[in-house]
Amino acid sequence: MGVNLGLKIILGSISATFLVILVIFIYFCRKRPEKDESAEMRSIEYKEEEEEELETEDLIRFPGVGKLSIYDILDAPGEVIGKSSYGTLYMASLQRINSVTLLRFLRPACTGRMKEILPAIQMLGFIRHPNLVPLHAFYAGPRGEKLLVHPFYRHGTLAQFIRDGNGESHSWAIIYRISIGIVKGLDHLHTGLQKPIIHGNLKSKNILLDRNYKPFISDFGLHLLLNPTACQEMLEASAAQGYKAPELIKMKDVSKESDIYSLGVILLKMLTRKELINGNAFPNQDLYLPNSMRNAILSHRISDLFHPGILLGESRDQSPITEKCVLAFFHLAIACCSPPPSLRPDIKQVLRKLEEIGKCGTLNLEG
Image (cartoon, rainbow, N blue to C red; front, side):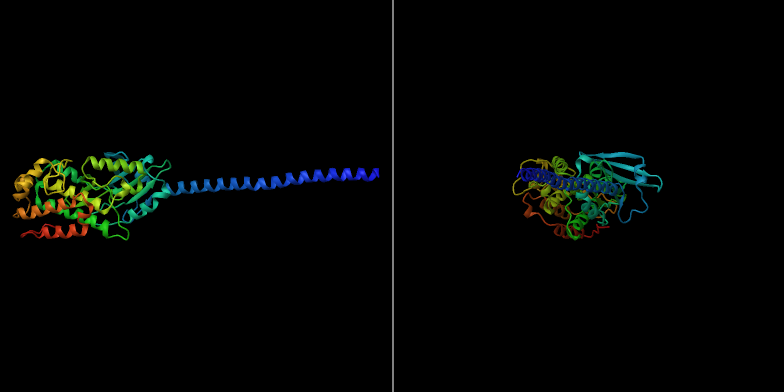
């Protein structure tokens, strides 16, 4: 009896010990996969970051760029020609290939992550049109900096052309040639692509000119690469310069109609060489204009509205210029600037109207 009792005690102790060991073994078996899984996940994340970094440090080249390398760009001496809250513009001399290019540096704090903006970069890089500035290449550095490579146009911007006030800026033929080129470029963005592109920041400073005054629209779709804070700063800058459509509150709300509004402001500035301001709307018109411009329209004193050189035919071809053509152009610009978006013409309507104006009288202004 004593032997049986002792045997039961021993067996009970062994069973308890075995049970404890079994519980510990199961615990560690379950714990280990979690550690392995955690380590594996960290490894995957590290590899993804490493692959992303390796991928973005390469130069992404687009059609027409030639044998450009990242070393050509990073080693190029550059001159700052423009600054904004989200980046800097450089004129860079690519010595190996004896070429001058335009480099746009986007600050790391102002752009989205590479994997977020890469689809937009790929889309913008393949857009080609005679009146659009092409994106030749794109580079993203290890610290998040982004670099866009464009061709350089030596004749400056439309803003400089208007501001300088030389004889050519008074030429109706030149004004028309620039205008229809801008409209054709915007038409391609709005209607000529599989997925329409909204410019989002159309203004005279973002239109480049060559020596023959052919216009090239730049910066289209740039807002797709920026974060919301930078986009809002861009919109505020546009508003301060008079280009922002009245319905726009946030950059994410940009539309074809808001682009048309900005286009109308550009047309008015070229024609009148006057700064548009926020004032009281004059009777029977929706556009907000300075008092001098309102009074000229109400009194039908067209000579007070436009620079005399435009109406007197001070152009290279010395063709006779009629007030009818200039006034039709002006009314088209006003229509583009209608505060209600629904009242603005679309880009196709603007193009058709401009082509009609171009045939005014005996002129052939599209040259």
